Length: 171
Image 1 (cartoon, rainbow, N blue to C red):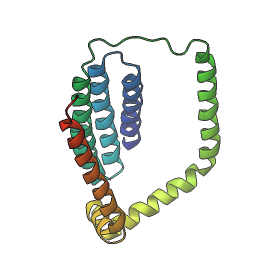
Image 2 (tube, rainbow, N blue to C red):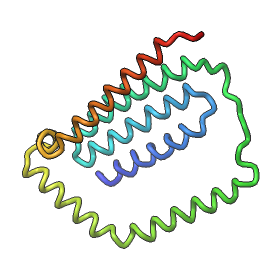
Image 3 (cartoon, one colour):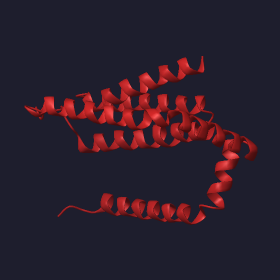
């Protein structure tokens, strides 16, 4: 049953992601993006990473999608203009995409059993630490405290820059 759910949500996430980049209306693209994020959160729950699923919903679906929606409204796009960009490259793009997909399959397939064993080992280690939220918090605030603080400073600078740009008056 777990494999069926994983396959179901994986297919939904892939289809929704394709619809994000192929939608002509930006509101529809944002709604497809929400579906992609929720499907990814469901995959995290299936994999036993409830904390990551909650962060996926709160941060990406809650904050990032709202940011995209506001940005699109501020840009004030009246109507999406369809521009043919592929012309003669469409066949090449599909061929190269399939070649890359086959190469990735050729590289990943032999390693699948080893990777599955590594996932089971990581899951056992996470269970030995307690809940995965506790393990993530412990690692984040002990081993990775410096990168965590650097990221928080970068976000602070980005927020200040966004406020300065928003308040700047045009001549």
